[in-house]
Image 1 (cartoon, one colour):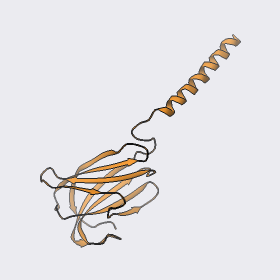
Image 2: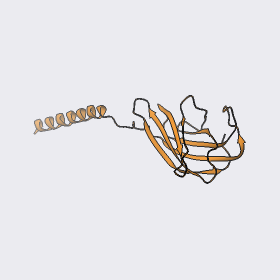
Image 3: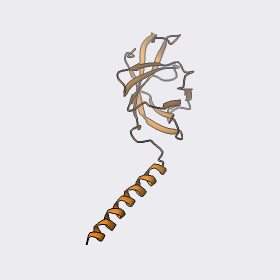
Image 4: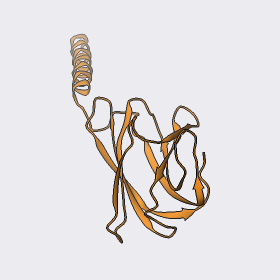
Length: 155
């Protein structure tokens, strides 16, 4: 009986080691603990407004809210379009973009990006974000439809 316990213990230890090794080799599209969520609003101000380091005044603003672990998160671009018009805008969201980033804490921040005056309050837009987490393939995340609303920008 004593040998059966030893064999069972060896089988359990080998199973745990083998499972751990396989777990390290399997990769998924999104790293664990790094799956941020995004929400968006598009704000139209009655007069052109400035926001921090953005060099001009604008009336339309994309406000992206990022909630989640930002470790290794890199934005590529945002594509904004409406199914009711032929306007499609693709803009960079990397370090070359005019954007104001307002961090609330380590996992929650707001990115405020100026938009051209192609849309007016009442239009419904779709925002398609392209981003990647370091070491993983790029991901596209669609938000919308998002209505253009009159309001104030949170700069």
